[in-house]
Image 1: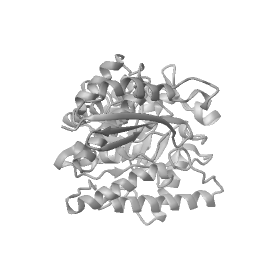
Image 2: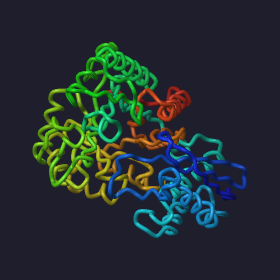
Image 3: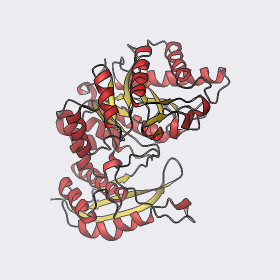
Image 4: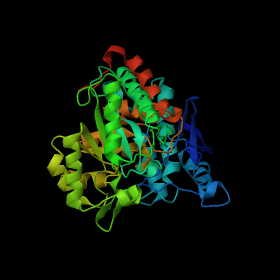
Length: 425
Protein backbone atom coordinates (compact mmCIF):
# COMPACT_ATOMS: atom_id res chain seq x y z
CA UNK A 1 0.00 0.00 0.00
CA UNK A 2 1.34 3.41 -0.98
CA UNK A 3 0.73 6.10 1.63
CA UNK A 4 0.57 9.88 1.42
CA UNK A 5 3.73 11.29 2.94
CA UNK A 6 3.40 15.04 2.36
CA UNK A 7 1.05 17.60 0.86
CA UNK A 8 2.10 21.13 -0.03
CA UNK A 9 0.06 23.96 -1.53
CA UNK A 10 1.20 27.26 -3.01
CA UNK A 11 -0.34 30.34 -4.60
CA UNK A 12 0.26 30.65 -8.35
CA UNK A 13 -1.32 32.82 -11.07
CA UNK A 14 -3.94 31.76 -13.60
CA UNK A 15 -4.41 32.82 -17.22
CA UNK A 16 -6.05 36.09 -16.17
CA UNK A 17 -3.28 37.04 -13.78
CA UNK A 18 -5.39 36.16 -10.74
CA UNK A 19 -4.12 33.97 -7.90
CA UNK A 20 -5.12 30.32 -7.75
CA UNK A 21 -3.95 27.33 -5.79
CA UNK A 22 -1.56 24.56 -6.82
CA UNK A 23 -1.11 21.41 -4.74
CA UNK A 24 1.69 18.82 -4.63
CA UNK A 25 1.20 15.36 -3.15
CA UNK A 26 4.18 13.10 -2.36
CA UNK A 27 3.92 9.45 -1.33
CA UNK A 28 6.22 7.19 0.67
CA UNK A 29 7.10 5.40 -2.59
CA UNK A 30 8.34 8.65 -4.14
CA UNK A 31 5.34 9.00 -6.41
CA UNK A 32 4.29 12.58 -7.06
CA UNK A 33 1.15 14.40 -8.18
CA UNK A 34 0.56 18.09 -8.89
CA UNK A 35 -2.69 19.88 -9.70
CA UNK A 36 -3.63 23.51 -10.29
CA UNK A 37 -7.21 24.71 -9.83
CA UNK A 38 -9.11 26.81 -12.42
CA UNK A 39 -11.55 29.67 -11.77
CA UNK A 40 -14.73 30.82 -13.53
CA UNK A 41 -15.98 34.27 -14.55
CA UNK A 42 -19.68 33.44 -14.85
CA UNK A 43 -20.51 31.17 -11.95
CA UNK A 44 -23.67 29.37 -10.87
CA UNK A 45 -25.19 30.38 -7.54
CA UNK A 46 -25.04 26.76 -6.36
CA UNK A 47 -21.36 26.19 -7.15
CA UNK A 48 -18.95 25.06 -4.48
CA UNK A 49 -17.25 28.09 -2.90
CA UNK A 50 -13.86 29.24 -4.10
CA UNK A 51 -12.12 30.63 -1.01
CA UNK A 52 -10.53 34.05 -1.57
CA UNK A 53 -8.64 36.16 0.98
CA UNK A 54 -10.59 39.39 0.49
CA UNK A 55 -7.54 41.55 1.28
CA UNK A 56 -8.04 44.41 -1.21
CA UNK A 57 -4.42 45.53 -0.78
CA UNK A 58 -3.19 42.32 -2.41
CA UNK A 59 -4.37 41.07 -5.80
CA UNK A 60 -7.53 43.18 -5.39
CA UNK A 61 -8.76 40.78 -2.74
CA UNK A 62 -8.37 37.69 -4.91
CA UNK A 63 -5.49 36.05 -3.07
CA UNK A 64 -5.85 32.39 -2.04
CA UNK A 65 -3.42 32.25 0.88
CA UNK A 66 -6.20 31.15 3.23
CA UNK A 67 -6.91 28.18 0.98
CA UNK A 68 -3.19 27.43 0.80
CA UNK A 69 -2.98 27.53 4.59
CA UNK A 70 -5.98 25.22 4.90
CA UNK A 71 -4.18 22.63 2.78
CA UNK A 72 -0.82 22.98 4.48
CA UNK A 73 -2.10 23.20 8.07
CA UNK A 74 -5.42 21.32 8.21
CA UNK A 75 -5.89 18.95 5.27
CA UNK A 76 -2.30 17.68 5.20
CA UNK A 77 -2.34 16.61 8.86
CA UNK A 78 -5.53 14.62 8.28
CA UNK A 79 -4.37 12.86 5.10
CA UNK A 80 -0.79 11.89 5.92
CA UNK A 81 -0.65 8.10 6.20
CA UNK A 82 -3.77 7.55 4.09
CA UNK A 83 -3.63 5.26 1.06
CA UNK A 84 -3.13 7.29 -2.09
CA UNK A 85 -5.44 4.85 -3.89
CA UNK A 86 -8.43 5.52 -1.62
CA UNK A 87 -9.76 8.38 -3.73
CA UNK A 88 -13.34 8.21 -2.50
CA UNK A 89 -12.27 7.83 1.12
CA UNK A 90 -9.89 10.80 0.89
CA UNK A 91 -12.48 12.99 -0.85
CA UNK A 92 -15.15 12.06 1.69
CA UNK A 93 -12.74 12.77 4.54
CA UNK A 94 -12.11 16.29 3.19
CA UNK A 95 -15.84 16.88 2.68
CA UNK A 96 -16.47 15.84 6.29
CA UNK A 97 -13.56 17.95 7.49
CA UNK A 98 -15.07 20.98 5.77
CA UNK A 99 -18.56 20.28 7.06
CA UNK A 100 -20.46 22.68 4.77
CA UNK A 101 -22.65 22.00 1.73
CA UNK A 102 -20.61 24.28 -0.50
CA UNK A 103 -17.11 23.59 0.91
CA UNK A 104 -16.96 27.19 2.08
CA UNK A 105 -14.95 26.50 5.24
CA UNK A 106 -11.79 25.04 3.72
CA UNK A 107 -12.53 26.20 0.18
CA UNK A 108 -13.49 24.08 -2.81
CA UNK A 109 -10.29 25.29 -4.46
CA UNK A 110 -8.22 23.86 -1.60
CA UNK A 111 -10.11 20.56 -1.54
CA UNK A 112 -10.09 20.11 -5.32
CA UNK A 113 -6.37 20.79 -5.60
CA UNK A 114 -5.67 18.00 -3.13
CA UNK A 115 -8.23 15.65 -4.69
CA UNK A 116 -6.75 15.90 -8.18
CA UNK A 117 -3.14 15.79 -6.99
CA UNK A 118 -3.88 12.60 -5.04
CA UNK A 119 -5.21 10.93 -8.20
CA UNK A 120 -2.15 12.01 -10.15
CA UNK A 121 0.17 10.66 -7.45
CA UNK A 122 -1.67 7.34 -7.53
CA UNK A 123 -1.31 7.14 -11.31
CA UNK A 124 2.37 8.02 -11.01
CA UNK A 125 2.88 5.29 -8.42
CA UNK A 126 1.42 2.72 -10.82
CA UNK A 127 3.35 4.12 -13.76
CA UNK A 128 0.23 4.62 -15.88
CA UNK A 129 -1.40 7.73 -17.42
CA UNK A 130 -4.05 9.54 -15.39
CA UNK A 131 -6.80 8.71 -17.90
CA UNK A 132 -6.03 4.99 -17.57
CA UNK A 133 -5.91 5.13 -13.76
CA UNK A 134 -9.27 6.92 -13.50
CA UNK A 135 -11.05 5.24 -16.40
CA UNK A 136 -9.58 1.75 -16.56
CA UNK A 137 -9.21 -0.33 -19.72
CA UNK A 138 -12.36 1.07 -21.33
CA UNK A 139 -11.06 4.63 -21.39
CA UNK A 140 -10.50 5.11 -25.12
CA UNK A 141 -12.92 7.75 -26.45
CA UNK A 142 -11.28 10.95 -27.66
CA UNK A 143 -13.62 13.93 -27.31
CA UNK A 144 -14.99 16.15 -30.07
CA UNK A 145 -13.48 19.57 -29.35
CA UNK A 146 -16.03 22.36 -28.88
CA UNK A 147 -13.82 25.27 -29.86
CA UNK A 148 -14.87 28.69 -28.65
CA UNK A 149 -13.98 30.99 -31.55
CA UNK A 150 -16.12 34.03 -30.73
CA UNK A 151 -16.48 35.32 -27.17
CA UNK A 152 -19.30 37.50 -25.89
CA UNK A 153 -21.10 38.10 -22.61
CA UNK A 154 -18.96 38.07 -19.48
CA UNK A 155 -15.96 36.68 -21.37
CA UNK A 156 -15.35 39.77 -23.50
CA UNK A 157 -16.25 43.38 -24.16
CA UNK A 158 -18.11 42.47 -27.36
CA UNK A 159 -21.74 43.75 -27.42
CA UNK A 160 -23.25 40.26 -27.64
CA UNK A 161 -25.26 38.64 -24.85
CA UNK A 162 -24.31 35.04 -25.66
CA UNK A 163 -21.04 34.08 -24.00
CA UNK A 164 -19.60 31.60 -26.47
CA UNK A 165 -19.91 30.69 -30.13
CA UNK A 166 -18.23 27.35 -30.73
CA UNK A 167 -17.47 25.06 -33.66
CA UNK A 168 -17.73 21.28 -33.42
CA UNK A 169 -15.75 19.31 -36.04
CA UNK A 170 -18.21 16.41 -35.94
CA UNK A 171 -17.26 15.15 -39.40
CA UNK A 172 -13.59 14.62 -38.55
CA UNK A 173 -12.26 11.04 -38.66
CA UNK A 174 -10.02 11.53 -35.61
CA UNK A 175 -9.24 13.97 -32.81
CA UNK A 176 -6.09 15.21 -34.50
CA UNK A 177 -8.00 15.90 -37.71
CA UNK A 178 -10.71 17.66 -35.70
CA UNK A 179 -8.06 19.94 -34.25
CA UNK A 180 -6.68 20.68 -37.72
CA UNK A 181 -10.14 21.55 -39.00
CA UNK A 182 -10.84 23.76 -36.02
CA UNK A 183 -7.52 25.58 -36.29
CA UNK A 184 -8.00 26.22 -39.99
CA UNK A 185 -11.46 27.70 -39.39
CA UNK A 186 -10.06 29.82 -36.55
CA UNK A 187 -7.40 31.29 -38.82
CA UNK A 188 -9.88 31.90 -41.63
CA UNK A 189 -12.16 33.68 -39.17
CA UNK A 190 -9.29 35.89 -38.09
CA UNK A 191 -8.75 37.01 -41.70
CA UNK A 192 -12.48 37.62 -42.20
CA UNK A 193 -12.61 39.82 -39.12
CA UNK A 194 -9.46 41.66 -40.14
CA UNK A 195 -10.83 42.34 -43.62
CA UNK A 196 -14.04 43.71 -42.05
CA UNK A 197 -11.97 46.11 -39.97
CA UNK A 198 -12.88 44.34 -36.74
CA UNK A 199 -10.63 43.52 -33.81
CA UNK A 200 -8.79 40.21 -33.82
CA UNK A 201 -7.88 40.44 -30.15
CA UNK A 202 -8.95 37.39 -28.19
CA UNK A 203 -10.98 36.99 -25.00
CA UNK A 204 -10.34 34.89 -21.89
CA UNK A 205 -10.80 31.59 -23.72
CA UNK A 206 -8.91 32.44 -26.89
CA UNK A 207 -11.89 33.32 -29.06
CA UNK A 208 -12.21 36.60 -30.90
CA UNK A 209 -14.22 39.39 -29.33
CA UNK A 210 -15.06 41.80 -32.18
CA UNK A 211 -17.49 44.70 -31.89
CA UNK A 212 -20.17 43.24 -34.15
CA UNK A 213 -22.77 45.84 -35.13
CA UNK A 214 -25.06 43.00 -36.24
CA UNK A 215 -24.84 41.11 -32.93
CA UNK A 216 -25.51 37.39 -32.74
CA UNK A 217 -26.57 36.95 -36.36
CA UNK A 218 -23.42 38.66 -37.67
CA UNK A 219 -21.29 36.44 -35.44
CA UNK A 220 -22.98 33.32 -36.81
CA UNK A 221 -22.67 34.56 -40.40
CA UNK A 222 -18.93 35.13 -39.95
CA UNK A 223 -18.51 31.62 -38.55
CA UNK A 224 -20.34 30.11 -41.53
CA UNK A 225 -18.12 32.16 -43.87
CA UNK A 226 -14.99 30.91 -42.09
CA UNK A 227 -16.16 27.29 -42.32
CA UNK A 228 -16.72 27.66 -46.07
CA UNK A 229 -13.43 29.48 -46.68
CA UNK A 230 -11.59 26.70 -44.83
CA UNK A 231 -13.08 24.22 -47.30
CA UNK A 232 -15.61 22.53 -45.03
CA UNK A 233 -19.38 22.09 -45.05
CA UNK A 234 -21.46 23.55 -42.24
CA UNK A 235 -23.83 20.98 -40.82
CA UNK A 236 -21.96 17.88 -41.95
CA UNK A 237 -18.28 18.61 -41.33
CA UNK A 238 -18.78 21.33 -38.75
CA UNK A 239 -21.69 22.21 -36.50
CA UNK A 240 -22.12 25.23 -34.26
CA UNK A 241 -22.61 25.25 -30.48
CA UNK A 242 -23.73 28.16 -28.30
CA UNK A 243 -23.22 28.96 -24.65
CA UNK A 244 -25.92 31.52 -23.94
CA UNK A 245 -25.00 31.87 -20.25
CA UNK A 246 -28.57 33.11 -19.86
CA UNK A 247 -28.35 33.48 -16.08
CA UNK A 248 -26.09 36.46 -16.72
CA UNK A 249 -28.92 38.46 -18.28
CA UNK A 250 -32.00 36.97 -16.62
CA UNK A 251 -33.69 39.71 -14.61
CA UNK A 252 -37.15 39.81 -13.02
CA UNK A 253 -38.31 36.73 -14.90
CA UNK A 254 -37.22 38.02 -18.31
CA UNK A 255 -34.16 37.72 -20.54
CA UNK A 256 -32.72 41.22 -20.84
CA UNK A 257 -30.31 41.19 -23.79
CA UNK A 258 -29.81 44.94 -23.37
CA UNK A 259 -27.48 44.21 -20.44
CA UNK A 260 -24.79 43.24 -22.94
CA UNK A 261 -26.15 44.54 -26.25
CA UNK A 262 -27.22 48.04 -25.24
CA UNK A 263 -30.10 49.79 -26.95
CA UNK A 264 -30.39 47.13 -29.65
CA UNK A 265 -30.83 44.36 -27.09
CA UNK A 266 -34.34 42.97 -26.69
CA UNK A 267 -36.14 41.89 -23.54
CA UNK A 268 -37.65 38.44 -24.01
CA UNK A 269 -40.12 36.49 -21.93
CA UNK A 270 -39.53 32.83 -21.10
CA UNK A 271 -41.63 31.70 -24.07
CA UNK A 272 -39.96 34.23 -26.38
CA UNK A 273 -36.53 33.02 -25.28
CA UNK A 274 -37.45 29.43 -26.11
CA UNK A 275 -38.88 30.44 -29.50
CA UNK A 276 -35.83 32.59 -30.28
CA UNK A 277 -33.39 29.76 -29.62
CA UNK A 278 -35.54 27.29 -31.56
CA UNK A 279 -35.55 29.74 -34.46
CA UNK A 280 -31.76 29.97 -34.44
CA UNK A 281 -31.49 26.17 -34.67
CA UNK A 282 -33.77 26.23 -37.71
CA UNK A 283 -31.74 28.91 -39.44
CA UNK A 284 -28.21 27.78 -38.55
CA UNK A 285 -26.49 24.36 -38.10
CA UNK A 286 -26.63 24.64 -34.31
CA UNK A 287 -26.73 21.25 -32.59
CA UNK A 288 -25.76 22.20 -29.03
CA UNK A 289 -26.98 24.99 -26.73
CA UNK A 290 -25.62 25.48 -23.23
CA UNK A 291 -27.56 27.39 -20.58
CA UNK A 292 -30.25 28.46 -23.02
CA UNK A 293 -32.37 29.31 -19.98
CA UNK A 294 -31.32 30.68 -16.60
CA UNK A 295 -30.35 28.46 -13.69
CA UNK A 296 -33.49 29.36 -11.71
CA UNK A 297 -35.82 29.13 -14.72
CA UNK A 298 -36.65 25.44 -14.47
CA UNK A 299 -39.94 26.01 -16.27
CA UNK A 300 -38.12 27.57 -19.21
CA UNK A 301 -35.70 24.66 -19.32
CA UNK A 302 -38.56 22.16 -19.50
CA UNK A 303 -40.20 24.18 -22.29
CA UNK A 304 -36.94 24.38 -24.26
CA UNK A 305 -36.27 20.65 -23.84
CA UNK A 306 -39.78 19.76 -24.95
CA UNK A 307 -39.47 22.00 -28.01
CA UNK A 308 -36.03 21.08 -29.39
CA UNK A 309 -34.53 18.48 -27.05
CA UNK A 310 -35.09 15.70 -29.56
CA UNK A 311 -32.69 17.26 -32.08
CA UNK A 312 -30.41 19.61 -30.12
CA UNK A 313 -28.05 18.90 -27.23
CA UNK A 314 -29.21 21.12 -24.35
CA UNK A 315 -26.38 21.44 -21.87
CA UNK A 316 -26.96 22.40 -18.25
CA UNK A 317 -24.03 24.27 -16.73
CA UNK A 318 -25.25 26.79 -14.14
CA UNK A 319 -28.40 24.65 -13.92
CA UNK A 320 -26.58 21.57 -12.62
CA UNK A 321 -23.17 22.87 -11.41
CA UNK A 322 -21.74 19.32 -11.72
CA UNK A 323 -23.91 18.32 -8.75
CA UNK A 324 -25.93 15.09 -8.64
CA UNK A 325 -28.60 16.77 -6.53
CA UNK A 326 -29.51 19.24 -9.28
CA UNK A 327 -28.89 16.73 -12.06
CA UNK A 328 -31.43 14.35 -10.50
CA UNK A 329 -34.02 17.13 -10.59
CA UNK A 330 -33.22 17.84 -14.24
CA UNK A 331 -33.63 14.18 -15.13
CA UNK A 332 -36.96 13.96 -13.28
CA UNK A 333 -38.34 17.20 -14.76
CA UNK A 334 -36.99 16.57 -18.28
CA UNK A 335 -34.94 19.76 -18.14
CA UNK A 336 -31.92 19.57 -20.48
CA UNK A 337 -30.41 16.39 -21.93
CA UNK A 338 -26.74 17.02 -21.20
CA UNK A 339 -24.54 18.20 -18.35
CA UNK A 340 -21.43 20.37 -18.45
CA UNK A 341 -18.70 19.01 -16.20
CA UNK A 342 -16.48 21.48 -14.37
CA UNK A 343 -14.39 19.93 -11.63
CA UNK A 344 -14.22 23.11 -9.57
CA UNK A 345 -18.02 23.52 -9.50
CA UNK A 346 -18.29 20.56 -7.15
CA UNK A 347 -14.79 20.39 -5.67
CA UNK A 348 -13.69 16.74 -5.68
CA UNK A 349 -12.81 14.16 -8.31
CA UNK A 350 -15.17 11.61 -6.71
CA UNK A 351 -18.22 13.87 -6.94
CA UNK A 352 -17.28 14.79 -10.51
CA UNK A 353 -17.20 11.12 -11.52
CA UNK A 354 -20.50 10.51 -9.74
CA UNK A 355 -22.17 13.28 -11.76
CA UNK A 356 -20.88 11.87 -15.05
CA UNK A 357 -21.97 8.36 -14.10
CA UNK A 358 -25.50 9.52 -13.22
CA UNK A 359 -25.73 11.50 -16.47
CA UNK A 360 -24.71 8.54 -18.63
CA UNK A 361 -27.11 6.20 -16.83
CA UNK A 362 -29.96 8.65 -17.52
CA UNK A 363 -29.11 8.91 -21.21
CA UNK A 364 -27.66 12.40 -20.83
CA UNK A 365 -24.44 13.38 -22.56
CA UNK A 366 -21.59 14.89 -20.55
CA UNK A 367 -19.27 17.65 -21.78
CA UNK A 368 -15.94 18.08 -19.98
CA UNK A 369 -15.12 21.75 -19.54
CA UNK A 370 -12.41 24.22 -18.60
CA UNK A 371 -13.05 27.56 -16.86
CA UNK A 372 -12.32 31.02 -18.19
CA UNK A 373 -9.47 31.37 -15.69
CA UNK A 374 -7.16 28.45 -16.48
CA UNK A 375 -3.60 27.23 -15.95
CA UNK A 376 -1.22 24.94 -17.80
CA UNK A 377 -2.74 21.99 -15.89
CA UNK A 378 -4.22 19.52 -18.39
CA UNK A 379 -6.10 17.21 -15.99
CA UNK A 380 -9.46 17.70 -17.71
CA UNK A 381 -8.05 16.26 -20.95
CA UNK A 382 -7.31 12.99 -19.16
CA UNK A 383 -10.69 13.05 -17.40
CA UNK A 384 -12.53 13.55 -20.71
CA UNK A 385 -10.98 10.32 -22.02
CA UNK A 386 -11.22 8.50 -18.66
CA UNK A 387 -14.98 9.06 -18.57
CA UNK A 388 -15.58 8.57 -22.30
CA UNK A 389 -17.34 11.94 -22.38
CA UNK A 390 -16.94 12.26 -26.13
CA UNK A 391 -16.90 16.06 -25.92
CA UNK A 392 -14.62 18.71 -24.42
CA UNK A 393 -14.93 22.45 -24.13
CA UNK A 394 -11.56 24.05 -23.58
CA UNK A 395 -11.26 27.17 -25.69
CA UNK A 396 -10.17 28.04 -29.20
CA UNK A 397 -7.00 27.27 -31.12
CA UNK A 398 -5.26 30.05 -29.22
CA UNK A 399 -3.63 30.71 -25.81
CA UNK A 400 -1.31 28.10 -24.37
CA UNK A 401 -3.52 27.62 -21.28
CA UNK A 402 -6.16 26.24 -23.68
CA UNK A 403 -3.77 24.44 -26.02
CA UNK A 404 -2.24 22.56 -23.08
CA UNK A 405 -5.44 20.48 -22.88
CA UNK A 406 -5.69 19.90 -26.63
CA UNK A 407 -2.02 18.93 -26.83
CA UNK A 408 -2.47 16.44 -24.01
CA UNK A 409 -5.35 14.89 -25.95
CA UNK A 410 -3.10 14.61 -29.01
CA UNK A 411 -0.59 12.71 -26.85
CA UNK A 412 -3.32 10.43 -25.52
CA UNK A 413 -4.56 9.77 -29.06
CA UNK A 414 -1.01 8.80 -30.06
CA UNK A 415 -0.70 6.55 -27.01
CA UNK A 416 -4.02 4.79 -27.67
CA UNK A 417 -3.11 4.35 -31.34
CA UNK A 418 -5.51 1.94 -33.08
CA UNK A 419 -7.61 1.47 -29.96
CA UNK A 420 -8.61 5.15 -29.88
CA UNK A 421 -12.24 5.88 -30.71
CA UNK A 422 -13.44 9.23 -32.04
CA UNK A 423 -17.23 9.80 -32.08
CA UNK A 424 -17.57 11.35 -35.53
CA UNK A 425 -21.01 12.16 -36.89
